[in-house]
Image: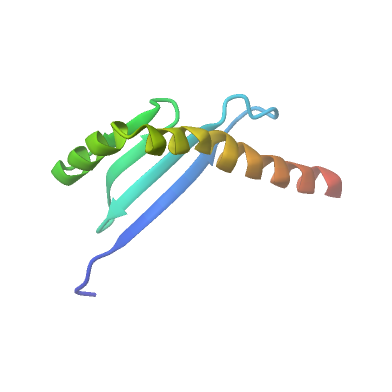
Length: 92
């Protein structure tokens, strides 16, 4: 209870059946506060604390990190959504 809490939540949102409007959000959380967020619509990291702004700036300057995060909408979101969709459609 007297320690620190770190988590990372990656979330995907879509409204269309073809996933053309898929949105990828990757939150970095420390002590229950989001300090850095990647949003696929924005296309880069945004910092919400002094430490988050510092790291977001570093990560945004690294093309490898940005490329990996930007690909997340396809490699993570759309990939898994297609698996879930086919599993559900096969059952109905």
